[in-house]
Image (tube, rainbow, N blue to C red; front, side, top):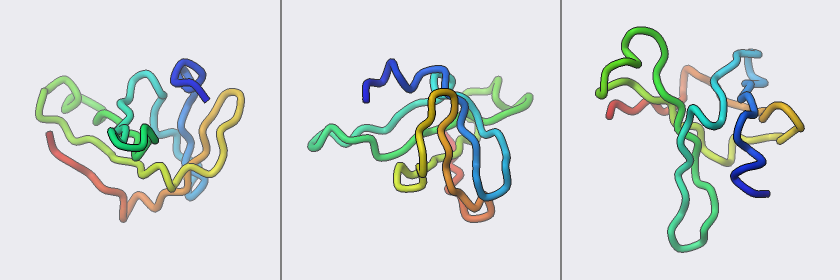
Length: 86
């Protein structure tokens, strides 16, 4: 699958049905050695997202369960999701 095929797809969490964001508003972490996707990084939401030190959610690629024509389904317990501050 090409990156261009992922852009515009909404990311939905099967764990709680939450809409997490859209590929295109997010970043992908690519393993330089293998060229495989390691994670999707979603920007923080709300007023904090206007600041450069916003919180970001990191979704491990292993959490992706299905890539459909319009959505990417992930299984992510947000209580245990990795939140990074950049």
